Length: 286
Image (cartoon, rainbow, N blue to C red; front, side, top):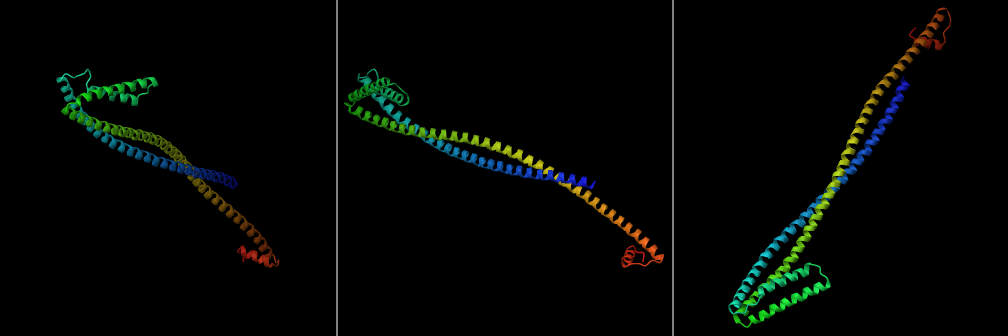
């Protein structure tokens, strides 16, 4: 019985150690996933902060672009107003051609924009360049006629200056608009990186939760084994005490029996040895 209980205790102890080792492994794994999750969350915050910086820059530059557009439009409006006065003068004096300077200038700007933004074959681009050159020549011819009139020459000079300013501002706002678009693209990319990083952090967190829950289960089973070991220890200890007590009782009975035999011999007149006397004292017969 006792040996069987000792063997069962040994098996429970081995199981307890297995649960403890597995619990420690899972806790270490949970800590690893927690560190990965924390790093990924920090990385996500960095991407979001960087995206916000690009967004702020984009918005600020777009405000500057809007202000430049308003100024460009104002200069163009002033130039157009002067060109309208010039066209009215030409009409009044019978020098109006099929297309005025204002209309020619608009066509030139439209064609130049197409040349900058669209892809053409070599022949088509050469044709476009020739057309722009022809329109500019027409503008210069009409301007040359107008410059012979002092008042119109002044208006034409002022209109050219406004148009020049509008063109310079347009180039500046185009550059700023491109820069704003770059910041917008970088912002979008940062948000995409943040989404990917956040998704990885969520996965690491899920792995952390699963490892932690498994570690908790191993710990629960370890505690259960520890309780079972304590129960075995109590039973085994009790059995050992009982066995020892039984052994002592048997020894006492044997001593008593031997002492009684020697005492009867003593009463019969036999001499006692020193060992006999000690045995009788031990059995409390003398």
